[in-house]
Structure formats: C-alpha cells, structure tokens
Length: 174
Image 1 (cartoon, rainbow, N blue to C red):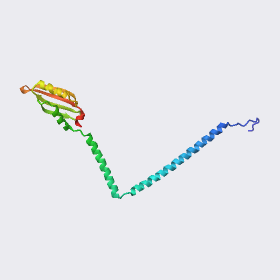
Image 2: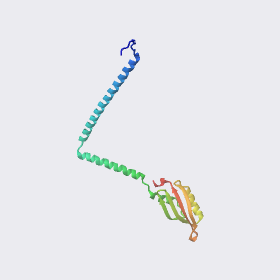
Image 3: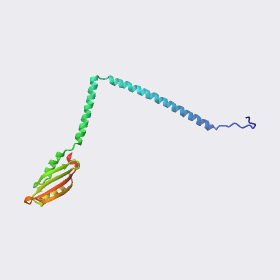
Image 4: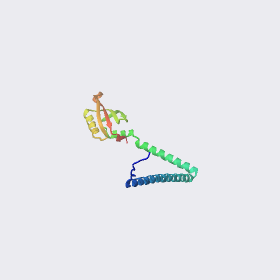
C-alpha cells in the first residue's frame, strides 16, 4: 500500500535518546559487576581451599588427634561447669534451720520439696508463748517468703504440737 499523502517523519525527543543510553550504560555496569563478583567468589574459594590444605599439612596426625582430644575434654569441662553452677544444694537447709530454730522448740520431722521450695516442719514446744517467739524469728528471715501454721494442738504433758509450712527463697539452695 502506497501512501498518497506524504507524512512528516516523527522526530524523537532529545531526552529520549539520553535515557536510552543511560539505561544501556546501567545494564552494562550491572552485568560487569555481576561478572566481577563471580570472579572474586571463585578466587576466594580457591584461596580457602589452599589455606585448608596448608592447615591440614601443619602438624602430625598424632598432634591433630591430640588437638581433637583437648577440644573434646574442654567441651566436657565446660558442660560440667554449667551443671555445677546450676546445682542446688538441699543440705544448705540444715545450717539455716540451726540458726532460726528457737532453743526451746524441738523439731521431730521435716519434708523438703525442692520443686516448690517448700519445707514442712513438725515440732513441739513447752507453750504457746515459745511458739509465738519461734514464729517471730521465722517472720524476720528474708529467706522465708511465706509461713503457714497448721495442726496446732496440745499434746501429752501439756506441750504444744504444731506443723509449720515454709515457702523458701530459692537462693537458700545456691
């Protein structure tokens, strides 16, 4: 088909050409940077393999075995140290009880529950006054968080029998 009416040729705007060439330059730079990164990665990989080869050649097999043994022992020692630091000592309750039990109070039984830090004491004393003094001594201790007096009764010979439940601070077992 032939056009009978001549048309003017479209002129492109000058900034369109500039944008085209800028976009083309950015594309070429990105491709070059990608190729450079691939090259640098392969060089780093080769250097790493060379260094690993040099490391494996240093020392005898016996020295490498000894090194593995030392690292294994070090790991075991660190594990043991962690266990010791976390260990709770229920025996710490005995010196604590010695320091807080009234001289005229006799404890006949106790139950210690380490999971809840609860100590149940069964005891007896001559009278209610001494029991009151014992409770005041226990209330003054910062290691005791809660005190529960239960099963209070008068036993044979007029002695006061009781059970005391103590919720202890976990710090006492450290």
